[in-house]
Image 1 (tube, protein in one colour):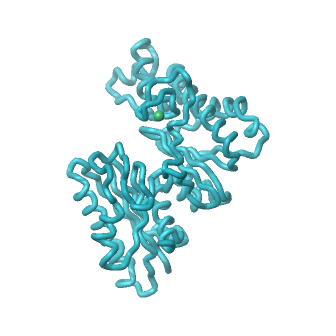
Image 2 (cartoon, protein in one colour):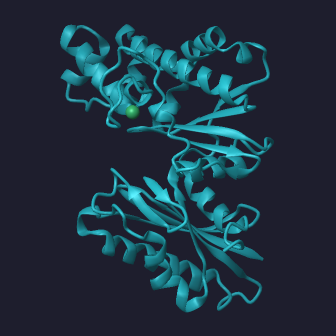
Image 3 (tube, protein in one colour):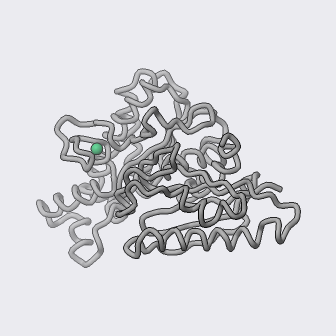
Length: 329
Ligand SMILES: [Zn+2]
C-alpha cells in the first residue's frame, strides 16, 4: 500500500495528513501556526507532525506500507527548481527561503524521503481534480475566493505553472476599468471585487450610507462584519447585502468569461469561504457569463462549487507526492 504525507501550510494553521493512493485519509493532525515565532519554529512543527504520521503509518509499523513522499502546499509564489518561496504575503519573513531544502534536511535526507513543494491554490486545484468536482475531466480551473482570490490551472492532469511559475494568479485578472487599487499594484483586479476583503469593504461603505438595513442592524448589535454575515443578511432578504453579492457575481462572471473564452476548459470550480455564498452570487454570475462569453453560451461548460471545500489543498499536496512528481528528480 502506497501512501503520502500531505501538508497544507497556511498563514494561521498547519494541517498534515497521511493519505493512501486511493485518496483515503488515514489520519490527520493540525496545529495553529505561530508565524510570528519565525519560520524555523513553523518548520519544526511541520516536521514533528509529519514524523508522527510516518512513524505510525509507515513501514516501521506496517510492513506493507510504502511512503511515496511528502507533498507540501504553501501560500505564495514558489521557484519550482529550487523549492524556494519567492513571495508570500501570508508568511512574513519567508521570502527567498528554501523551504524544500530545509524540510528535506530535517526530515527527508536521513530517511531517503522526497519532498515536493507547490503553491497552495495549485494543490487545491490538483486535489479537486483527483477526488472532487474534477474527477471526470482532464483539465480544469479552480478559483479560490477567500481573503484574497487565487487560482490553479490543471491541464491534462498536471498543474500548469507557466514559464515563470506564476500561472493561475486569477485574482489579478482585471475585471473593471474603474476599480480600486489592488495589492498587486494594478487596479480593478477580480480580487478587489470578489474577495471576502472586498465584500467587507463594500458592506462597510453601505452601512455608512444607510442605517436601516438588516446588515446595519446586525453590525450595530455587535456582530462582527464578515463576508459570511453579509451572506446571511442576503439570504434573509436584505437588499443591501443582496446587491453586494450580485456585484460579486457580476465580476466573477466577467472574470470567468475571459477564462472560458481563452481556455475553453470543460470545468471551472469555485472554492474558498466566499464560494459558499453560491446562492447569493451565482445568478448574477451566470447571467454575466451568458452575456460575455459566446463559448459559454454554446453550452457544456460547467461552473460549479468545490466538492472538497477546505480539504482540497491537503489532498492535493498528498497527490503531488503520490502522482510521481517525485520520480522525475
Ligand atoms: Zn491585483
